[in-house]
Figure (cartoon, rainbow, N blue to C red):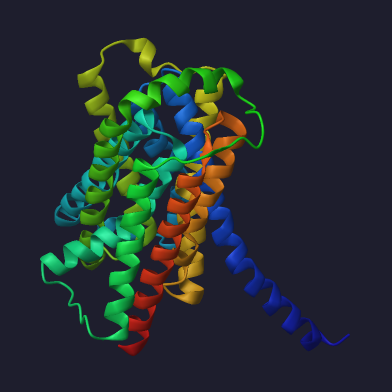
Length: 338
């Protein structure tokens, strides 16, 4: 038996596994958005969802930290702890609470757009803070500008223009569809403000990552500590906002499924799979798949909740996705040139 004959097949399997993993990650995120919408609309306390999600995510990252970074937790001094606490505040507690409140007032399809425009806002903030430069006359600079304009224009189009409704199928969760139809219409503006605030906070968080990695360069322990700190922060805020013990109770229902799904798949699973892909293909590869979460969310939202698919939402989503791809393309060309 020729062992070497199996080497190309194994390599091909790994190559196929990289894009498959990233597609699965985007499906995880889409499922989390739709499940969270249904649970929040059903009355689940947002900070209870965030607290349980953060603590569960931390618990599932611990085995990876013990396996790949054994003993590195001893190097987490007070300086690193302070940065991780700040990292959790602006990377989990603030953006995710704003995102869930925005999701409560809008639709999963609309909210998914804002999760994907954070890299664009990060770039704009980097320009304002002079952390990056923009050469307008260069090809890279032109690609970035066109990408930003298309993404922002597509998001505005979804918000301002509906067009013809495309009724493709009846929603599986008909009861939730009737409840949500009346709520979303009157709270779209408030939800948009929450979602924009979430994207802005996420953008600020991206800018702090380089500092956190310099202070404490162990990604698994850093992620575990960030999830743990975020879980404690959201627990404290939740206790301040609501002293009712019933808001923290869990049963064998959809809320428990949402927490398990968000903590295990959308937090721990997403991070570990993304880290593996980055180690194989570099940091510019995973963001290329981010727009897929918008497509998956639109489909799952329409199938399960019954959010209307309109001509305006399709055109606006297409514009936002194309804009994001153009921006990422320009960013990857800049990295390759450097």
